[in-house]
Image (cartoon, each protein chain N blue to C red):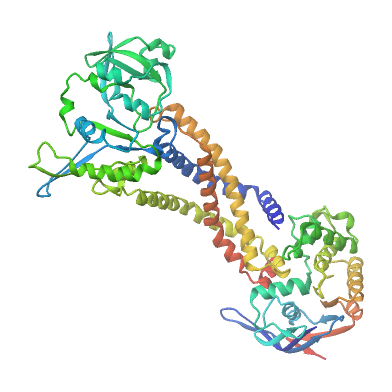
Length: 220
Length: 415
């Protein structure tokens, strides 16, 4: 599904150069649920951003479904992100000014799709995460767990092949975290590939593969 | 997508009410000034009111004579003889009128003396301009031929001299500079360049008939074409006629030039074009006006650029999220520009209402005598266009800058 070949990423500021990811080879297979673990600052999120095409590697190449995207223009990458990936963030990153249903619709805005169809899919996605009754609420009217479920609905509304979750339970209590984890596992069971960054060993053990990152490199 | 843009824009504006209000005040102040200017230009140059036929009439206000040695130039209004002998017989025009420029005249009423602006005009003048007759009648060719001592007053003058209804002035007598006139008509006040006056009397009421023999003098000519499409031909005809005019002192003056101008051409000739050639400089004038308006918008636009950059920076997360879910830089830039243009259009509507109020006030205090301001559909259209340009001017740069934010950094900025 996604293959990283000798991928490195360096962040440069005026005086400091930080090698965040060093020559990583990683293959995420279709239908897998991969948990990425490691200490803070080890490069997990950078790796996730590279997988999700939010960032470009400094060296090495990334293939999505066997197609190298190194030479893709920004517009092509945006289109590929829209069709292939769904993102779930630790801080939810919902747009506070928009209602829940409008937040969920967001990825579909960048597809050529009638408004009615967008609305229908958004409603279905919200029902799937158990928030069918909260469509007209605003994010700040929901609990943290509910907000993350809205974020999951937003991530899956476009029926992406891959879900990328950056510590999706990091801001939730254990009960809500477990609920979110159950939803992710359910989606994976339906065939969606999931890559998740987590610090929680217990959650990681529920996935199909654990990838450990240390100092910008994969460790066995 | 547009609905989402509008919804987001509305929410963003409502979230930071003070910020939005500051933006709006900045926009409204700028647009009010520009709309007032636009309204004045519209009133001055658009065919309306008494000059409703101005799209098919031309005026000759000045003539220029150059000496043989090229060192001496004389610029003067036309003489009646020039109009009567050279312009009135012109083929292919509907009619040609002669009128003096307005000049001060003392009106005596018992002990009271009023200073008025008076024009002497021929009967064709009343047929080219569309005065609204409030009472009585307008002078005709028979009055001209008979040299009848009659006068027409505008409403304000009639009210000042003979308080009451306009009809009360009709039949009354006024003494203007020692001449006695019977008031035969009262017309609505008019400010337009060819119509401005307090009192009108036939040309034939001049105390002396010397004017009939003068090629230079105090007259302007109005030429009414049958169709507006004829105007360029008439302008060329007039150019040729000017070349054939032999001045009273041909030894001194080598060439005579005058131009038949539209209202805009006349203004352009007086301000930027000069009276040396057929081209009045109207194109240059319009370009200068457009440049001045753009320049006037630039400073508040730069201010808005700063405000907008701040406003958009607060939305880095949203930009990051939208990018993560597939928005391209151009889609985001468009969204941010749409938001800014919307704000400017809202400001434009407020400015339009404020402009209407300001113009009504200016009209009420009569800053310029008889000035009527018109906030027409055209001004509305121009106002909205100016608002859109202003929105684009102040929105494109921050939108472009923000749309190019790296999504990872944008998302981190929020965390």
